[in-house]
Image (cartoon, rainbow, N blue to C red):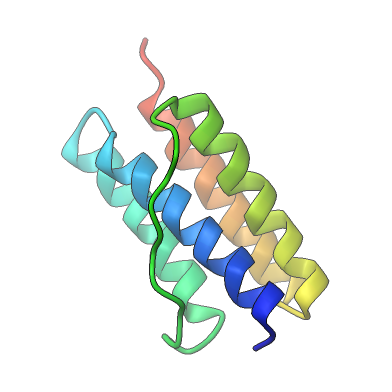
Length: 99
């Protein structure tokens, strides 16, 4: 894994984890945890550590996580896996929006 790939994966994992931490229910947090597991499966569990996230704004967290996941395609990550992960993130986001 190249450094740029590892940084991108760490960013995706960090922002998804921050979304899980700020979820409004246990079920919503579990949906984000599923996204993290999907991200980890791309590399057989060999993943860079999560880093500090500079913002707590949920919409920014989502946008950065979505962009980082989408950009993983540029690093030879399976396109279907990226699409599934993006779909899972969208579903988790939709389940955590206030009514």
